[in-house]
Length: 110
Length: 113
Image (cartoon, rainbow over all chains, first blue to last red):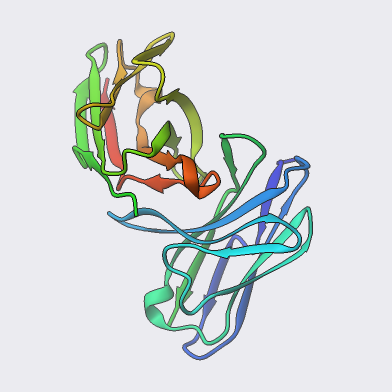
């Protein structure tokens, strides 16, 4: 089984809908991250969490919120999706310097 | 905050030739520089990294060099193979950001058999 899993892998939704992307990890890491990837822009950090009680905004947190339900689970929510949030979303974990990425969720907002 | 620039955005090489990807960073507090490989449909995977107290690191066909004075670092792949075809990302992590990474915009490498 993969160490970092993301659900769903693909999602199409409509403008204004609330959507949640989920991330689970079996690596036992305290640190978890959510990134957004757009063509030609690389990976941009949305939110990160160093433990269950610690949540921090990244470069592009506007329009997103997160919940760290447990050490192993970190969810990303779009309260009211808009078309420019169409992107590939990655969850990652780390215990030291190396970050381990999930397979990604492709989100399309119509 | 940190700003990482990566060049070129696309690179095509003949199998067996070398490939070089270059990145620059702006924050002198950055002290950790990983390189990630992303294959189609997958998440990025670490292939090599270097810390600011080292000028060069090599792992088989892959090497990374760091010039702290000039604030640039490069990935070198020798004897390229078709399976090296992927998107490569550099990143920089400043010491005061708690393991926060700033990524370059990626290089799509194609190795032509």
